[in-house]
Image (cartoon, rainbow, N blue to C red):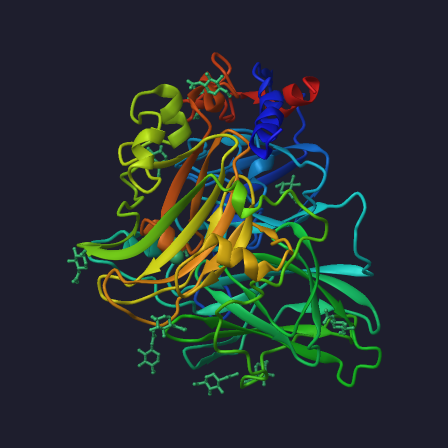
Length: 581
Ligand SMILES: *[C@@H]1O[C@H](CO)[C@@H](O)[C@H](O)[C@H]1NC(C)=O
Ligand SMILES: *[C@@H]1O[C@H](CO)[C@@H](O)[C@H](O)[C@H]1NC(C)=O
Ligand SMILES: *[C@@H]1O[C@H](CO)[C@@H](O)[C@H](O)[C@H]1NC(C)=O
Ligand SMILES: *[C@@H]1O[C@H](CO)[C@@H](O)[C@H](O)[C@H]1NC(C)=O
Ligand SMILES: *[C@@H]1O[C@H](CO)[C@@H](O)[C@H](O)[C@H]1NC(C)=O
Ligand SMILES: *[C@@H]1O[C@H](CO)[C@@H](O)[C@H](O)[C@H]1NC(C)=O
Ligand SMILES: *[C@@H]1O[C@H](CO)[C@@H](O)[C@H](O)[C@H]1NC(C)=O
Ligand SMILES: *[C@@H]1O[C@H](CO)[C@@H](O)[C@H](O)[C@H]1NC(C)=O
Ligand SMILES: *[C@@H]1O[C@H](CO)[C@@H](O)[C@H](O)[C@H]1NC(C)=O
Ligand SMILES: *[C@@H]1O[C@H](CO)[C@@H](O)[C@H](O)[C@H]1NC(C)=O
Ligand SMILES: *[C@@H]1O[C@H](CO)[C@@H](O)[C@H](O)[C@H]1NC(C)=O
Ligand SMILES: [Cu+2]
């Protein structure tokens, strides 16, 4: 049997899951976790108090811990009075039921103020790792996010303890002002990050101006092994970071997949990326504290932040402040970090280049058309498109035609009518992201993120992508599975439209669904740097949850959105799935 038909068979058996259970989530239904979203004024770092979207009253929100192999219901309350919200389970997309991915322009209507929505998540065994959750509405995710850890049944690496290092940035203006500016004609830029935060705190400097705010403290003991889980929860900042006095870090996980141990002395964490590293603490530390230094890269100015690695845990805990100057010299160039070095811990079903059925190039370009917008293969994705969530449109058949593969194949993979990239179940696609000079000639670096199935990250380069030549660079070893990797810039400017830089992914299309693929810089998203992929044909996509069960999802504030006087009735997708196995 060919690789292709074996794949199809496994998919067909999965598809037998058509009927859907529904259940009324009345007072007898107890969600596994609850998140409450509010809009409140808070102070962060050295900045004046401003409006932020918080989760359970904090930014980052509380840590969520799931166990692989289980199904969970997470209830999200929108306690705001004037804003919609959704929650996206970043990196877990393939584990969510069709309406649980949390994308307001694709998988669901947003949760209206004073309403709640129950998200269903089934984490298969093998998905243990480091994730996060965040709002997918506007610029809210600058603060509305928190760590999500999927615990292992059997941990493949030994460590004594683990610590989360949740990285965020913050800006002088509040999220609503920034959002208005980014879609304004002409563009009103957000400004550069005013601070980098670790676990919600941070001081340092921005563009040379010092900020002496108290730091987060990571308590450790000598002579132990810690798993540090770094989470790139920033809006804009591409962080380069290192730990004073601790120059050997071993990467063991990237974006929720275990890797073979890979040594590095520093890390680069872009918006949307996660890494776990093993840190072997010093047996006999000569200082009681060491700085963790973080710096922005690929921006016109440097924002610097610090946290503390503390061997001297004391009660009551001490307060620590940033050093007056930089302590560590972090590399200036970001290009190619860990590329061709990360390999999966256990072999995966990595398809060889001979199995690739199609190569899709996704060319990004910044244009000024009054507004400043990002185009993908000449099309932007802005507030005016789509006008309702894409999946909902497909169900209602009232706005968007189901994407045509025929039209897409004549247009580099993008169907210009439905503005989607269609893909057939069973295809193996190389997706090649291409960077180009803006109208002004400028170049930017972009952390591209895929919802849906994780891709094998094939690497990056400055010339052109050649599948066979690139495969040779792997030397028979497999690339790691990722969900967010960098489209680098290979210079700060070039000609208008000149291609300079590529990143390639290999994607095995196995499950029907509608998934976003976008740059994870929140500013760029609002300026149009987003795409949608429709995987599977109309029957395959829409029969996952058939009528009449789907009705409650089709209108804003519909039956599946609960409120004070209304219990929602939700589809139990994975219950059905389990019963049919
Ligand atoms: C969030 O807050 C609610 C109460 O306001 C609480 O019931 C819930 O457990 C909290 N969630 C987490 C993950 O801590
Ligand atoms: C909250 O912050 C916003 C700026 O983000 C400000 O306009 C508003 O007045 C503040 N509200 C309160 C109650 O302090
Ligand atoms: C909330 O979402 C609905 C549906 O997309 C939209 O009509 C409404 O304007 C949104 N409200 C706000 C405050 O953005
Ligand atoms: C950074 O600081 C320099 C010197 O004070 C100033 O000229 C420049 O405008 C600042 N840049 C930004 C982006 O704030
Ligand atoms: C990684 O570094 C450790 C020491 O920190 C060393 O023992 C090991 O051999 C290194 N591994 C590789 C692959 O270089
Ligand atoms: C930062 O503030 C702390 C507490 O007020 C103070 O002890 C420290 O000297 C300050 N550091 C600098 C560089 O100003
Ligand atoms: C990075 O560039 C700055 C300014 O050009 C230079 O001072 C610094 O030494 C460089 N750092 C490294 C690690 O190369
Ligand atoms: C950049 O190139 C595009 C496509 O050729 C063209 O429409 C646009 O006017 C150019 N922009 C500038 C500023 O030259
Ligand atoms: C990338 O290629 C372009 C065109 O050949 C060249 O101008 C540029 O210097 C290269 N950049 C890097 C970082 O090698
Ligand atoms: C969709 O694909 C399935 C195979 O998975 C096939 O049986 C069906 O006929 C296709 N439907 C359409 C509308 O093409
Ligand atoms: C609560 O939901 C029900 C059913 O969707 C709706 O009729 C009612 O208007 C909602 N109440 C509020 C206060 O929004
Ligand atoms: Cu971008």
